Image (cartoon, rainbow, N blue to C red; front, side, top):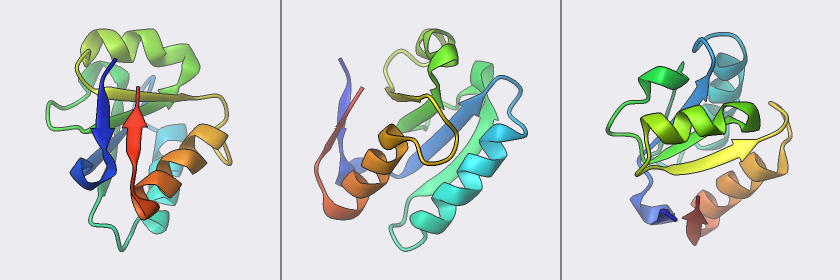
Length: 102
């Protein structure tokens, strides 16, 4: 199971089915929350996860596809696009330090 130290997170990808709509909304929210952290947040279709991603966020229903495309990346699945505990925990870990596990 991949894991990454919060200090090594430089790029988060929010992946959704088409790379529009819901992922744009979550990526925008994360950019605001992490604006002083030096972490880049981008959104993309789940089939186009870039190789330089450190952490991939995607809806739990797309987790298997994301894992197939980027098996070596830390994958954080979530259930709801706004206010999901998995996303809140990721942001808190980046801000306060610690390890993010897949």
